[in-house]
Image (cartoon, rainbow, N blue to C red; front, side, top):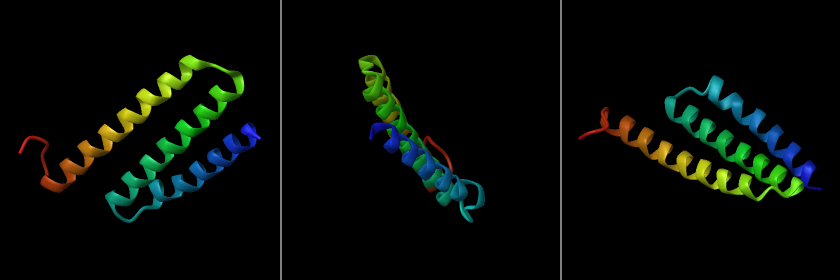
Length: 85
């Protein structure tokens, strides 16, 4: 069941990669890249649960926080045109 979910999230990330490559605006591409990051963190979480690796869960949480901060930085940059305003 867990491996099936990991495969499902991998397929979803491949579908989201279409939006990253073809996306008409930069916002679509950023949302697609963030979606891929979320799906890949879910795949890593499924693998950590399947193999019972507790350290990997901590790494995934740090990765999720970095994804969130990354999107905040991109949003601020594309709203104002610079980061320090």
